[in-house]
Length: 232
Image (cartoon, rainbow, N blue to C red; front, top):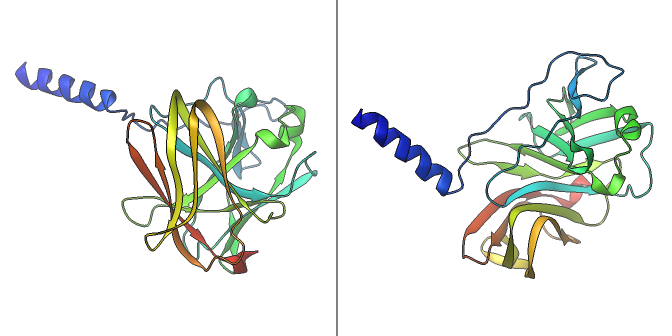
């Protein structure tokens, strides 16, 4: 009985600290003519969810580059450069209509993971181009390493999209390389939901960078990512 109580209080403590168990979306076969989130063409899970599972703490939900602004091509090329022999996990989503695309069967060539997406579901669901978020990462050790997702064609800047479940300030938004700050910004007006942080990388050298995010309570999160100008 005592062990059960200790376990219960341990679980409550984890939830209080903002930890939530990862919940995988159920992806099953279904009617391909529907907009539901199902396995499609044997190579991806795509469609509209009943709701989005979101973390109890602020998190990175997008790291991508794209020149798309108005409408989707019939086939949109999704690329993730720099992952080598590692197969990245790719997540494309929109909180608008709870669209989600994941569990892609990528093909790799020359260190670039690639997928050609038929955009029929995106167009039928009327998901705006500007509402789409893309994220890719590998887990070579105990933490994630993020790689930029190229949607169709790359732009001259990266889009970082963060999600905050509560209204809060973000006095520190920094990109660092080898401990040196190369880009700095802040959000002094309390923000809830999604917000963007961009970086025009220019001639920034290839290597591992870190996105440092500190909220108004002093809690820091660090997102490690790779960049190489030769990818573009």
